[in-house]
Image (tube, rainbow over all chains, first blue to last red; front, side):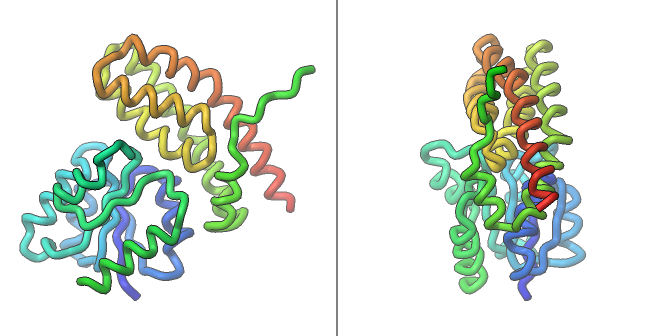
Length: 122
Length: 121
């Protein structure tokens, strides 16, 4: 079973992701960037779902730390964001994310497809 | 007595039931009812203090939760308020924060009723 790390400060979003993904993947959850980066050192996940708007270190900064770490840099990272502005997808891909999922999550298939595509690719 | 207007979109609730049944829906409602009023209070405090970044953060945090649970008017007010706060247009945010303060307690009450009904199914 692939390990998927969820970095998300909202407890209700974590609960939702557990319900959607919990049967298919081993989920490891982090509420903030510092805890996540520390956790990745102990147990490297196969894929990361990373909220953009986190307190303290935001998702973009966490991504840069991941991409700057030789052990973690190739990990697939999907941005989770409630921004949903025009041009966001391109912006996040340019920043180095592998994909982009908007909140609220309305289609679990989109999420599964994004995860499976990236797990197969990596 | 005038019937209270529904502020929660049943489509969003059905979607959550599809994701994880009544257990997920109940859990999501419980967390929302517990946490959303704090976010709204943080938004009010930030607005009164003129802190655009804090206002944006509070509205952003409330936005996805309200959207996921179908609290549509609260969600829309968060979207509009966050956009204005990100541009530093604080005075224009007032009506959106007031909308949240007016609608959130009603949405929470309606969600609690739905949760209570689903718990007895």
